[in-house]
Length: 270
Image (tube, rainbow, N blue to C red; front, top):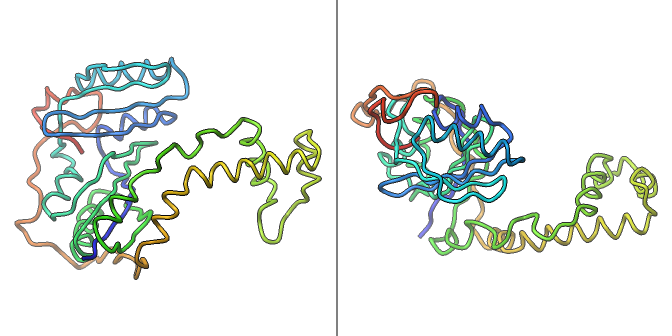
């Protein structure tokens, strides 16, 4: 059995996305069940995290579950915006599955879609493109559900165990073009800019590369075991339409986080 596994970034009017525009330095991860949305908010500073929590409480009646410095876990009533139409609602109608979490950052939301075939996924993409911009981040034909199971997330964060010096060495090497082919700089030159000897700089750089490789090894191994990606998903077809009954019924709902979702009478998320 083959399945299609895609990661898709969407930019369209949405109350949750509007909130991520208001706080572009914060990352929002969304999980949901049949009764609630759960947001994990990660901000660069504790003060900003507090402002995000306040905004979620004010606009969405969120309840704070846990707070840890610049990170917060909140529970919200489970909303699905009818106007604009819900991406998850469109996925449900086209029988495409959304694998959580949905990621919100800088006014864009990133989904992981799993479909039984490309025709079904293409149908969903065409409908979502009516809402706004769509960017296909990855698209793979997988050999079965085991490969989907093994390729959701890394066992650790990509940056876990990466020291500050290793991080700075990686950034310096990238910015100087040291890792390009051909290289735009010399090791000695970049090391000198960092105030290090060539050997010390090289050691930090190699350790940083090894740490990122180890952290992402499970994903790389899973990716190497899947079937080839095949042709790219179909582009937007201007004259193509979907069946009339498949179009979402639109009800009025909040277009920005400034209005309370409960006051709008809408239900479920975007």
